[in-house]
Length: 225
Image (cartoon, rainbow, N blue to C red):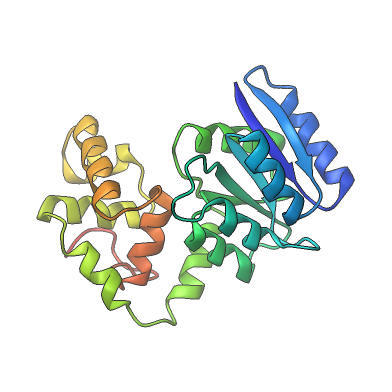
């Protein structure tokens, strides 16, 4: 059973999300919160598997609440999915860097909302194709490559670097396997080692790091050169 904390300052939205998710046999609502302060308090007490976190809220916004829940050293950190009304939101990129596993627009179809919760609960990252890559490109392309981040990638082997670049372009394990002509099980092993070596929470943060280092650029060829 996947336990979920729903956080939004609008009661109707909280109720709607909770009703959709609670109707699934493998999902249960552990609690609801109306602001970031309450979200942090309830998350620490209830230890949900997934937190659906509104970005803009009174008292404490979703970004600050996510940072608290996902701070280094937190043992029982949940998976956090950010919810936003806007397809481009300054807070969302910062939330990804803080450790959120992805984000959704609030007008997402119910089936996609359910699938998103299951995806992040299983340890995968959530990349909303309508928004995530464009948002990351918009914020990162204007920034110089971070030397410290680039040095982290240099510790990868040649094959791991190839896999990392394809991960950073948003390719799935199956697509990476087809591109590099390797078995999918081999790809999974490479992905696990890459995330461990680079100390990345999940694949979303591989995308972020790829753009931050300048190894991936908007419109670039996903194949290593």
